[in-house]
Amino acid sequence: MIFIDSPALYALLDRDDRNHRAARAIWTHIVHGGEALLTHNYVLLEALALIQHRLGLEAVRALHEAILPLVTVVWVDEALHARAVAAWLASPREGESLVDRISVEVIRLRECRAIFTFDEAFAAEGIPLAG
Image (cartoon, rainbow, N blue to C red):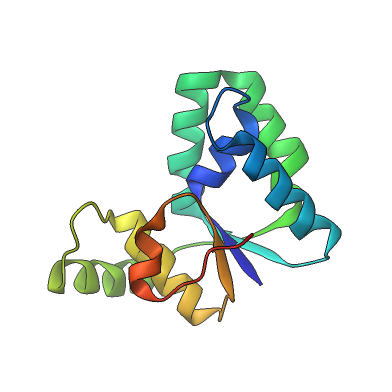
């Protein structure tokens, strides 16, 4: 199973993004390889806000119609949120957001083998990048 992060979702949709070509290649490899994809609702909120703001509602529609049907979404509950906040505050890493910390927790809980992102900070957690 591969976790998909908001930078990858954005890069898939923005043809002008510097990672667009790489994102399309990785996406194609994952989808054709039959690998399961996973994310959580905080990543979706983060990605949707950015996509709507920068690319508009048609890009949001493309995300919902072409990409998200292939992705399982974990809904963050109170316990997971609290656990991630505690871990985030206990050992802050420069530039790490709460969304990133929740992603790390979900990746570990669901035993994802890699993360599809262009945020290299996940390597510090020992999480391999997909692709």
